[in-house]
Image (cartoon, rainbow, N blue to C red; front, top):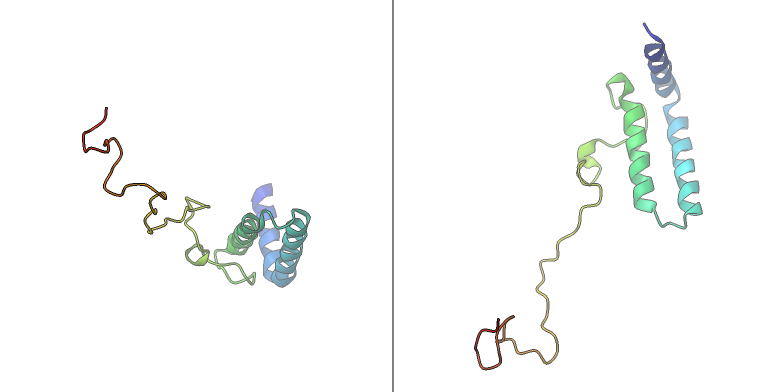
Length: 114
């Protein structure tokens, strides 16, 4: 067993034995960072905390050690796109005074403009 294997085993044991304290400490650190940044990065901080908790909790192959460590399916977004752009299905209203019968590239007399 190499050095990294020993370190992983010790870290896994620490998470197994002290998962609640580790989770609380991560939450405190995240809260402090969120406070210091004025809430500007709240979503990113929450995502980072969730990822850190999942990574630590998954060291032993079972997600049972840290409270609040969600599974990827319940974390909200997809793994590939951390900031999905919401789509707005509502149509854009016409500008005031615009003729709704006049499309782009169409003259007021109905001729196509080049």
